[in-house]
Image 1 (cartoon, helix red, strand yellow):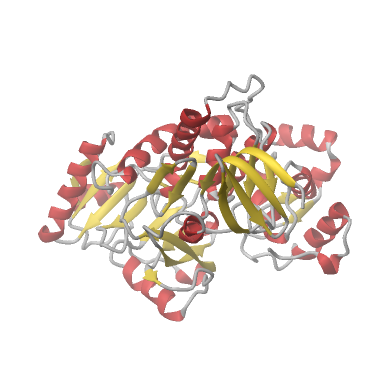
Image 2 (cartoon, one colour):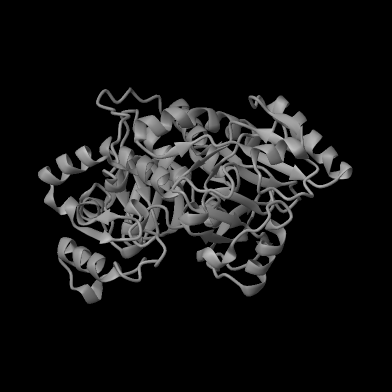
Length: 465
C-alpha cells in the first residue's frame, strides 16, 4: 500500500478540525484532514445550540474560559473573512429567586475575571422590558450583550473550504484504525490508505479518547452527553430577540430559548450522559422536558409550530476542561464540549501555534483568508436578483419553496470545493429542505440534481453517510 506523506494530519472534520486546518494553511505545510464520514460537519458540529457564548460561564483560569473569550472576540473578523452569517444578539441568564441570584452574581464575577465586556445584573422588570415574553416569575437576569448566534454548518464548511482553497487535502470515508510512531514520525492507517506525518492533531470529537488511546496511555475519557432540541417555524422567530438561558447546573447551561441566525426559534437542549457514541435519537421524555423547562423562563412558546426535533452529542471529557496538549508531536484537542463552537477559532490558532513551535514552517505566501459563500437569492433585492438570474438563469428556478432556494444555489453547493454529495450535504450548505415542510416537496428535485452532477443514478443518492 502506497504511503502518503504529510507534515500534519488532522483527524476529524468537525468545527475544531476544520478551524485548525484553516489556521495551519497559513504556513508552507503539507496538511491532510481525515474524516470518517462522507462530509465535514457530520458529528457534534452539526447539532448544537449555534450560540457564540460571551464567556461568563467558564471557571476563570480554565482553557474553556480562555478560548471562549478569545474565540468570541475573533468572530466578527472570522464572519467577515469567511462570509458567514453572525449576529451579536445578546443573552439573558434568568433566575427566579433571591437564592438563585447568588448564582448570577457568581457568573457575573466570572465574566469580569474572564474579560467579558458589558456584563451586568438587571432586575426582572428590566429584563421583561427587553424581552416581553419572559415569564412573570423571572426575578433577575444577567445581561451579556456580546453573546451571539451563528450557523454551525456554514461556520464549519467555511473553515473547510478556505483550508482546501489554501492547499489542505481532505479524505472522506477515512476512519482511522491505528496510529504508531516510526522514529520521529507517525504512521496513520485507515481503511482507505496509509499516511506518514510529522504531527498528528486529534480532533475526533466523541471518539477523541479512542484515537488518543491508539498511541498514548488512557489518561482521559470522553462521555457522550446527549442534548435534544426542538426547532420552531420562522413565524415564531421573533418571540425573543436574545438568547434566554437559565441558571446553569453541573450538567450544563440548561434549556435555552433563542432565535436562530436564520430566523427560527430553538429550544433545548436536554442533558443526558449515555454510553452509545452514535445515539442521536429523540425521545418523548426528552422533548417533554424541554417544554416544561423552557416554560420556566419564557411564556407561551407555541409548540404547535415545531417543524423538527433533533439531538446532538457533546464530547464531555473526564477532566472537566478542554484537553489540549502536545505529546511529542501528538496533539490532542479533546473534550471540546460547550463552548466549543465559540472557542473553535481560538483553538485552531492555538493548535497552529503548537505545530509551528515544533516544525518552524515558513509562511504560505499564497494564503488567502477570504472565502465567498453561495449567493442567497432570498436575501437579495429585486435588482440584485435580476442581475444574478441574467447571468445564471438556474438561479431563477425555485426548488425549495419554504426557504426560497434556487436550482442555482443547489448546483453551486455540489460543484464547490468539498461540495455536497448527499441530501444532507445540500441542506447544510444552502438550507434546501430545512423549512416548514422539511424537504417534503423539494427532495425529488434535489435528488435529481445530485444524481446529475455526481454521475450516479437517483437510487444511489444518499440522505447522508
